[in-house]
Amino acid sequence: MIRRGSTQDKALLITFMKRTYQDIFPNQDFSHLSQTVEQYLSNDTPLWWVDFIGKQSEDIYPSPIACLWMGNAIDQITGLRHAHLFLLYVIPEHRRRGVGKALMQYGETWAKARGDKQIGLQVFASNAPALDLYKQLGFQTQSLWMVKGLNCEE
Image 1 (cartoon, rainbow, N blue to C red):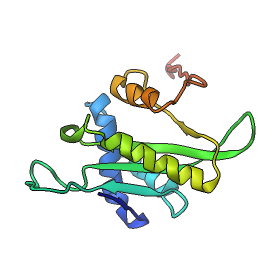
Image 2 (image 1 turned 90 degrees about the vertical axis):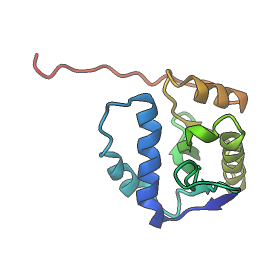
Image 3 (image 1 turned 90 degrees about the horizontal axis):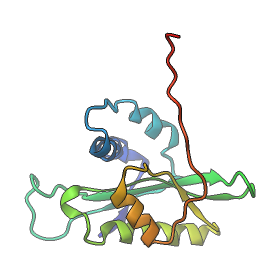
């Protein structure tokens, strides 16, 4: 079941953000993510949760099992506002069951209702399952985000 979250869900959202990044970077400290949530979570950046329905053990299947957090961005080419995906996370035990796809379709419906013409997102190149999902849903690479580490000791 998909339900709307609120700005009161900050702690849970931070937990889900840490989980998604720790899946890819297990030894990194992500305590700074609370600043992101504090800065961007608002009534204008909706959050949805998926609760597990059925027989469950809180140890095995805590509820919620997934979330979607959407926001706003400005297309740097057209100048138009569009929906932006901040976070999509499904706990590992519930992946590959259509939960992420259902949440993305929910987000797309929200974006269309607002009059948005596109949804943007950022995904790590090493996150093959996410890349596969987004390609399946019709997302295409528009640009590449590149970074260069700087050695401050030089």
